[in-house]
Image: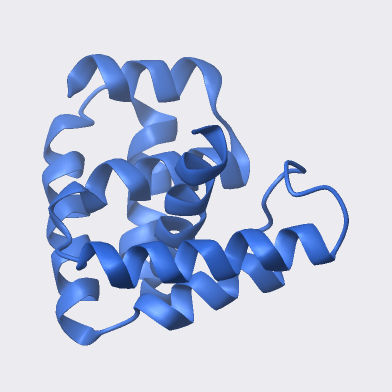
Length: 126
């Protein structure tokens, strides 16, 4: 995991870094496949309705917000926060990553939208 955090440190910034870190932290968030597939499908359709479905994702954009709302539960947010805490423990010596993780942990709605953006970005990459 340390190598991935170092890669984020070297290449990602802004909202992209938040989305990647939240996506990494959310690997243990349990979401049934059919629920995830449906939410991501709706998110992609919203992107397509607004123009190019492969444009940059915006954390407060309609598609990301829709995916976040569709998948949101208190248990999932708690699991995401646990993943963020675990990443924080590995971010020693990586100041931008540590700051981004602290920002995510201090703002749960931002963390959840960032996670949704990461999931949607993964879907678009496939």
